[in-house]
Image (cartoon, rainbow, N blue to C red):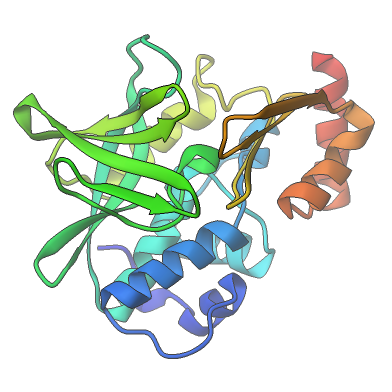
Length: 272
């Protein structure tokens, strides 16, 4: 399903900094999930530059592993699914409606994974950016987990819908909701087409880079860099066009070539 047989597993494990044996068990799932989100940044540079975003495994390996770039949810979770499948996990896709942007009804555009281990389902999502979990979350109504001070929970709604939530100083906040039926790589392709090309997509025409750190969570959207700590303390500053490439490299670990850097400089100058 996820082309796991085509994956260079050793190269992937080296990319995320994981050493040691792997097996289709919960210990491995947790370790790989945490290592992946720490090592591979969430970013949309290709979309911002108007490029096509291929999801075939060869392209994903070349970009996220070989070039040590990052990607957004379809890229991140497709690569993670291939690695899990190669190791022997039972992996299924899901499609979610983002609720983190307020009460507006948004289209179903977020891709995540459900992994079954010893008969229990776990929500695995390496591609939700700065608000996402560091490790898998039990896919059970009322589940609550703490990950380095960040607390996540799962609630059930009518129709079998599950909601991933985050506990903040002001209370629980919904992140996204998804139905129980599986989706497939071809569905990731359809959502990817919307997110990478539709004029109403938040990824089109601006740079987005996100980092779900343990101590602080960081977001760069267009020219605003935001840092949020566990206690809710928030800091913001403006990143000018000339600073953009250096900020992406220094804070998010996104190394760009000269053509990409020049393209972002033009984009930033045009949107100031």
